[in-house]
Length: 135
Image (cartoon, rainbow, N blue to C red; front, side, top):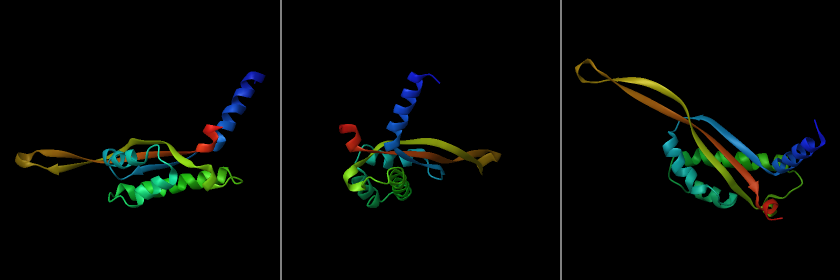
């Protein structure tokens, strides 16, 4: 590896040191319902996002709350010397993608069958420190 390439790799590695993420795969909720909840917390501070999720009546908010807590814990594991309150964590990115689909058949009139698609989704939450981006 050349010296320039190594310097760029080290810079990218140092930048990713502050960023932590958590993934939830094959969550048995449709992506459309999960995106409604994800849009509420995108770009918010971590404490504010947790409060929004805690008091949201939607079923998807419970799963997203646990995922956000996991992302915060992952950030804390990466940055043991840093304090969470001083870091000003925020939800940098939240992505909801479609997962696997269970396909079922429901009987319909006149010998036909209607297809039922039981959808699932993959959610990725990226948490970053606000202090790092300002300095």
